[in-house]
Length: 348
Image 1 (tube, rainbow, N blue to C red):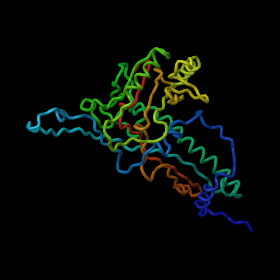
Image 2: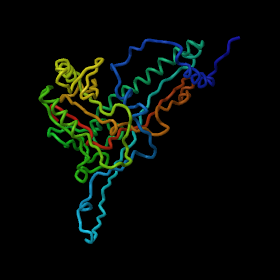
Image 3: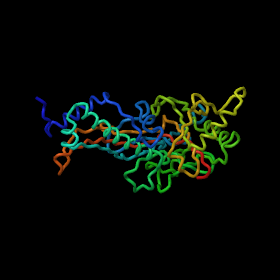
Image 4: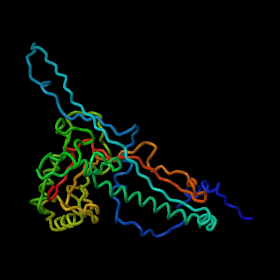
């Protein structure tokens, strides 16, 4: 005698099926992007961080005091200064979610065999997760239009801001008066490196990348606890398809006997051994940005206990034959040292 599945059995059935998702196969051709840099690299355990509280707070030592270090005579009078060298950075949480659902009669009773139920659940769950990942990917390459936007995350262009003047001139993102609550007039060291280039060539873009690479590699003379130290590839360079295509041409044409800034290995272009990554979202920009990002300083922070938290299957309010499953993510991006990051464009 076959077992009758009742509506009260649906949550347990879904939970059991989710634990067994590896049995059936299907060819997924629904995704819109070739690859997913943000979710596959930035949200890796060795890159991301977890925190709690009502927001993300970090303390920055953003300036040095004056007059503390000097040469003196043995018996000269002491003159002790008490400088205020710290400032607080505050980043709000943002929340993302996705969901998928089942209908008792259509999805459970009409597909009552274990294999058939699995075949219903697996693609719906995959669909909801791909949609979430694609949303994360899109939002990571944009900044909130203004400080009144409470829904959008602080994507990379919020932290690494373009400027036509070469040097540490990447200041406020458009529509904002501070960066994560940090006043840049009082804390000028909280600016990223920027430059403008005209052509993708050795004498223009690559030469300026060399200069930026030297200027952004800060090494502290004293050891101290800080927020960096993430493992994995420290620097990654992001750009659009047209720019990376030109960099590939330069890499192919370089004389190996002279030493090379650009290289190519297994189809991956590198600059001084740092991978250059094509980002499809940057193809729609008009200024061909080239981001050189130190991922020991820029990374996602997730609310502890709310990283891709998947709910049980629950009855939909007002629809007793429908069940839904939600996946929640509370997170944002932070950059604890903007000076270690750079962006070059053809015009800010």
